[in-house]
Image (cartoon, rainbow, N blue to C red):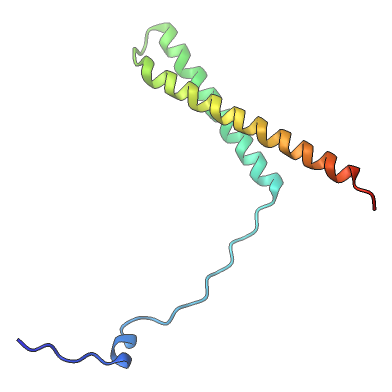
Length: 98
């Protein structure tokens, strides 16, 4: 069995020329923070619903509920840390002398 030689022009013709990446639309910090708050709120509501289902006896999967509650708690704590860091940065900027 013989394998034909592959030349560089032959190999490059097989692939489409690379197109420059389209820039992603910029997202403001306010939008990112609003989306994060909305997502965390949805997590909290989902956990509340799951806890209500456990209390009513509709589900017995306590492991899943406790994991969801822990996940929502970690997300909320992370949001609080972000808030604290933003406030600290704002105060630092306000202390700067121009």
